[in-house]
Length: 335
Image (cartoon, rainbow, N blue to C red; front, top):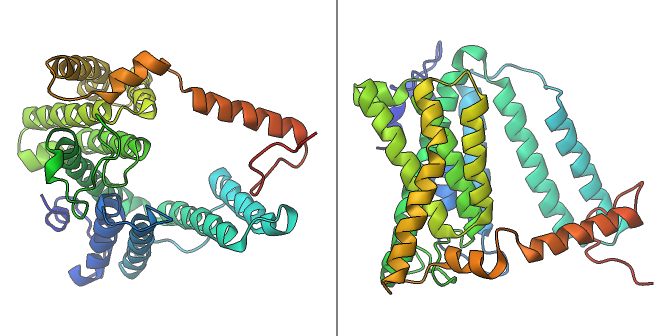
């Protein structure tokens, strides 16, 4: 399934807008959402530099396409998220003066924060008549990124000799899939958002319309959720484990969702158990190492290093109760 083929199905029709104007929207989503997390090529010191640049390029194309297609309402939207991002940008800009943070690091942080602010503002500016169509296209791209990441995970875990480092990154963690961004937590986060995306597509009936059957749409929902959960297990990311719990909680408390969708979300914990059992059995047969099992045995469900980081953050807040530590302070001051 290609993103371009979904334009008509998503009903992105804009008054007085020709199809060539909407191509920028599709290109932006293809570049910034689907392809950005799949770029395997990297250079030090920033392993994800090209992924970030692709995401920014996609955001620029998307904004231009939405503006050209006349689906953005003029004016700024003032909300808590936008205000928080702007305040954090100001703090990042002040860090070179207050804490001696190098300007290169401060500007990088500001770029990310302001990029997120632009994304929030653009999302809120989409006209109500086109909002569902744009969100559907976004979720199609997100699910596409998730499905392509499933392929990457399977190669990294079961056919590592096929990972050439160009199209598919080599996993530097034995017994774990890391995705093309080479970070299990990034991979798990992407897969969780892919789960959210496929829920939107099924809840809105997009899957049923494309497959021309409500039953087929529900089956596709279960299949994709299972694949995403399976790759979360392969990643060994405890962030992903928490994400599974949040999916179950979402299905339990959100009464706006259709019953079939709520049941599917609740079943993700069962999928997790089945996937874990299958990988446990696979590892026991001596076919492959299973890092998630080893981490659970050695460290438990918690993460000692992250607990130490939380303790350090608490101590920093105690040192700077009014102003906070901000960018540029990574260790506690000496006695």
